[in-house]
Image 1: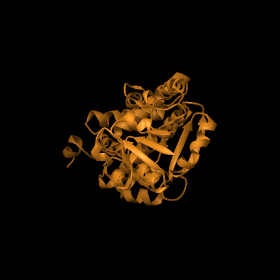
Image 2 (image 1 turned 45 degrees about the horizontal axis):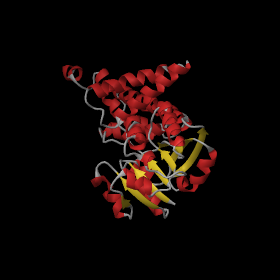
Image 3 (image 1 turned 135 degrees about the vertical axis):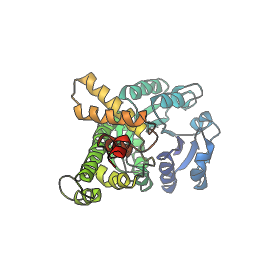
Image 4 (image 1 turned 120 degrees about the horizontal axis):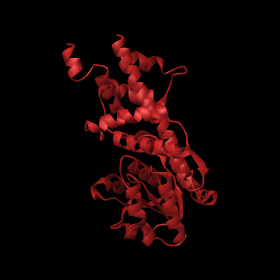
Length: 299
């Protein structure tokens, strides 16, 4: 099976490395060729264009920033669908709106290409370990054809339903994550205001009902002020915005997610969008008088 991979970012590169480790031949393309260095060092092949990649591949995986980028590399002039052979399988791992996934899938089907929307959950270290969660929308028959390949990347694969269902499940997942990160920030700041070392919160929540992945992965980084991006505030804002719009269209209430979205919006307004979504901690500090003019006045 010849695999083509488009999008070598923080998550794309470890995915390609695991495909190579599993013995797959992988051709890669990225807008910035220098970002392909690690993949090429492990035996991936460079494609000079999306067209060349699509023509040589049985499966094409895309993992780009947003719906506009997915549409461009898949459906645009010179994109995957203009050059892929009939019978090719397209797997879009981008985190995009369900309606965007369905639209791309319809255009793919018209060209004889089967598409799966298959966003992932997990950070770069999880990707490196091959322990991602993969949420899949599309036909079960298409999934069965590529399942062994996806198993080389993941700890769990969930088939959520037809086209768009994988993207929908990703939004639900990230709604939980975005709210959890916000609550972790609030808890750590509350502890500080009460005179308790915030690391005590991290330690005690490692057991019991308050245990969360967000606390385990973000608390130490918040305390240390390390907001190097694993999943940026911009990306979390995008996903929570899309999730709340979806909820509104369905008549589902998401009041807590709306509050978390407001804090992310404030982070972006301060130019922090490119930092990790854990940077909401700094916004909660500001609101609590621990950072900025209010903190300076209290000294």
